[in-house]
Length: 482
Image (cartoon, rainbow, N blue to C red; front, side, top):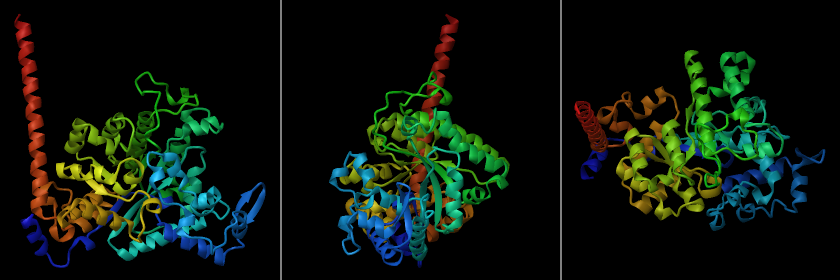
């Protein structure tokens, strides 16, 4: 540690505050903090109170009319009345947590302020995101990978989302997009929106194949996809799963029941479609998409097995603490894990029991992320808030924090050329050869330790595998002689 501190002090200018950090896991609909949303709502009520914002029962209502129906005045609005922050009542209650997305408990306010498809064409939501992006640009060294939803309910969802992004110019050099796919087939089937699971997959992927093969068929979507870096799979992992995915499972077109497919079923078919789509896009020299699902926040260990097989990196990974063998595999493969201790503290695991420090000490590639600043954070810089609390609780050193930040950049989907500027020209090389202290603030001694330890572990695994094969060969020879 003394050598690490000495190395950092020898480099002028660079410190933890001015190295790049990426929030790898953050949802666009909750990327602002509660005070930001409150001020925005008050500002709109003051300046645009007569704007038609929602249609109810065939009648369009003004913003003032909506608040009149709720019997609330701008003076009444406060952070407490907004009631969007997670509390002790949301612990192990994902349903109550989802209700926190409704300001003042009113779903119509969610539709007005944090949806892309509404009577104001998602303008309020776009303005909110652009204000958050402005804050990121002002900080210079903080970036975010925001998640937007595609549900798979209809074929025109992609065009609507792309039209919203292009029309309102929701672009920032500090922001990239991931598309999250909620696992809600059972809701769509029950409501008669789809007849089978294949329809959901078709609604999600057919427009992507069309725009890839013929960009002019969906020009706005083609433009939007240039800023999309990957896909996510989201929902409550703790839900019971009666069906266990196996080789005899029904094909998507045969899945017509109202029962929701299992987590692994969703991941498998999403991954299969992405592999083919990426192959086509790579052939046409167009940007490809990573698969980075929510995985291991709760539920079965099998979720993490599936994530290990198909994901580039994952979000949460809490359940890994229960399975050392799988944790070891994630370490050997260096699969990135974006962890959100403050989010977990309100939903599934108390902060002091979070395994992130344990994973980090063992050499897993972990990064800190915010998940939902609207529900979990208080300040204008939620990512720094996450780092600050983790540093105080686990007594992290500056080197530790800088390594977390470096991991977040490596895991991210920002362009390769940008990463070379942020981390050094040779950042893709392994070990100290790929580290540049004056860019990352991570001393070579730390990087060398991580690299040498990993190499020794891999060498040990390979040696054990050879011994096993040799022993099997000797047994086979002995049997043949008999």
